[in-house]
Length: 288
Image (cartoon, rainbow, N blue to C red; front, side, top):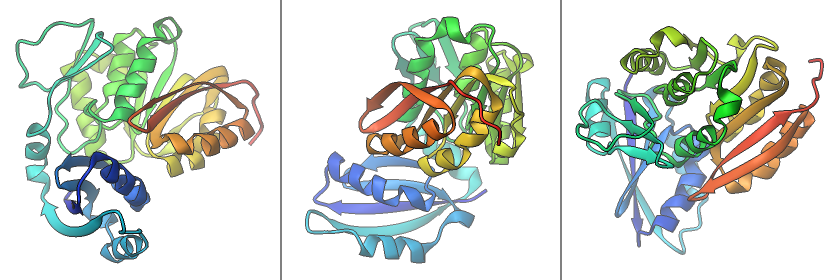
């Protein structure tokens, strides 16, 4: 699957301006971002990209603070590993969980070590949303142990692998709509010796089964979360936990409102660099 690399040159450049622009273009379907002064680089599957939509969006942005120029490059599937490997440094979350690539050697040991070869899939642990959910999981080990866990939009499988290592009930279910991501996640589960404790599926929320899970982890994006929260509610057991991320702090109220409509209450919210993760608990089951 080919990807488009969108390089947005910001003049003058700042991390704050890059964050503003990221929020503006996020609804266009971009999957990941990198900043390299003076550029914000965004990646999207070729078939999902519309340059005309990009031009319309950019034309509506107030450029009184910074000027925007852009270029587009095609990244063939065979080159995507090079993009990740060039920027993939080990990640340590809360001093307890290390997320690394297979080519990282001689690292200080932590309690949980997850080895990821990302290929084209999202979820190396570098993004704030992944590390936020990992941090939440590390703080709720007693609630995960022995429980049925689903990783929705699993990407490389980091969250499913961690749940399996934290002794969630087997199999931990991991689902991604991208077949390459699903293949990558499956390979990574075996690389981390939890392949027999996980089950990776390719598809969307229609694969979820009613009342099957104690915990659902969904690191996707705001719009998909809003669309699928009712499905998550139907799929959780009463008093089940839903942890969501992939959105900005200012999006929390609309997600909480929708979650409340579906029987959830918000228990906790965490924020890192304006990205957020929220933990909900299902208190009331509705008939859908």
